[in-house]
Length: 360
Image (cartoon, rainbow, N blue to C red; front, side, top):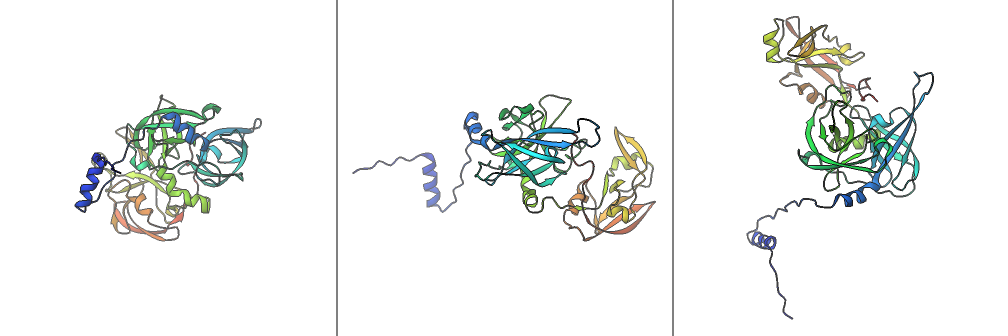
């Protein structure tokens, strides 16, 4: 029996590469699955969340029900959502795609990143999402969000990635990690739901919207969640090194504008109560000034070096602190009143702060 062999372009490349002992690199193909098919495949793993909270400050109507979204990350029924949806809840219930309403409990919560991990009370193996790679997300990529906006469960909206690496310093709880900006419609009730790429993989967790504009929403990159997921599962929280200072870099422009004893480094504006920095005697600012529209507190210490290494950028202090564990000693070079001095303190386990979570 005669057989006819047909060579495609890719086959020919593979044959030539094999003959030359060269590696063959697979070319990534764009996902072209219809959005309706993505919804049908992913929506069974998306849930709506009802969290009952008690406001002890109200004499009446103390009970409040917060509605949010979430998505199942493993077949055993663990659900990832936003911390602000379930934080402080006295009871949590989850409505599955089937319509069944089941009880859930919080097994891990991080108010800094606004993440929470829930456990559904279910004996059945449940469908789970596929976690993608938010590091590959580009501006202009098409995305969809599935969630429970305004109580309308299993709603899909469509848009694009409008921006990446968005830092929102004026929004409590969102300045620790850059966020993904999208114009996919996000409304109250979407919080904690998945933001999906064109392949149906989760690349973000829809978290908040801008109240002053339309179609400006933000999502926590899924890589951020993946980096702490194990800690949430095993310890119920994320352990972070902490010394308790807030501030900003002393820029060359600030040095030229203010005739004060300043040097390049990290200007300490606030020393947090009970922190290692306070115990070590570090001082925060006391005089408020506005420079080119930005307000800052001056008069505090300036950290010029950490363990002998000079501070050169705004993220140096935070990045170097991440290399330490609670209980380890840390040496700071501090400029105060025209002179430099060495201050040694012990890194602590960061406690929860009042500003960690966005306001409801």
